[in-house]
Length: 64
Image (cartoon, rainbow, N blue to C red; front, side, top):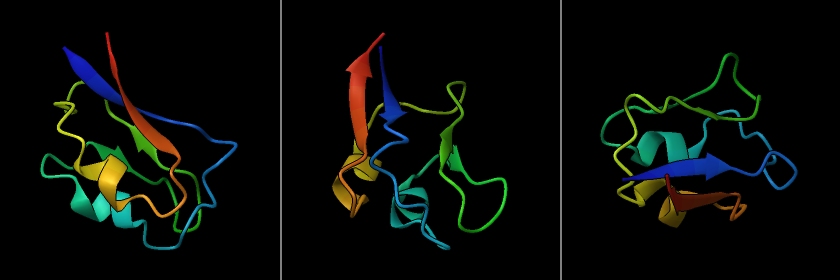
């Protein structure tokens, strides 16, 4: 099984995160616009759409 992981040091916390928008299961969320995205592990399938969409290259998919 794989899951997305966000490197908070690389994430520039966009108001409307492109990676969050690219997630088909809506596993990425922001508490407030402009905050770092968080991955909901129960929803993430590890598809990698968020990795390709992240402009900061702050997301990786890792094996659990």
